[in-house]
Image 1 (spheres, rainbow, N blue to C red):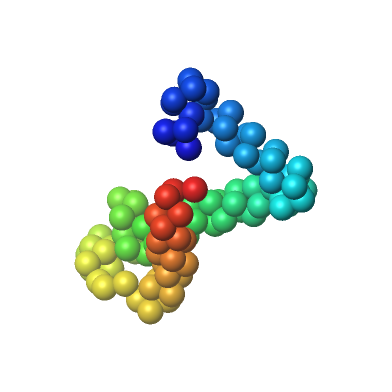
Image 2 (cartoon, rainbow, N blue to C red; image 1 turned 90 degrees about the vertical axis):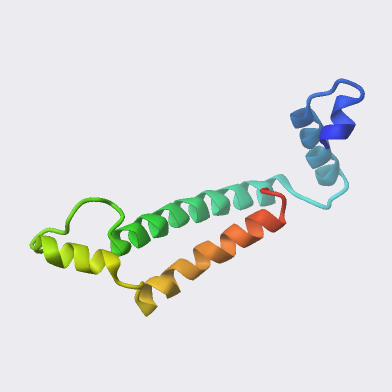
Length: 106
């Protein structure tokens, strides 16, 4: 897209818009479907952020000791390997990141 847009001096975003409109005109995409995908993407991003924050908390990377715990307990937990649960919860994030990279970050 970048190469095609640069030769006639058209903005890349304009080309993306034209392509999306063409797909809609040909019946290969629908505006409603685009809105649903955008909403789903927003929900996925929010969930990713939530999971990343949870993993940081589980790994003790927040820098804030947990309430009611001793300092030595906090440092012991921050040095432990992640639990099976933390790994299971982090797996979707890894998969989403891999798909994101494979799709050229789209």
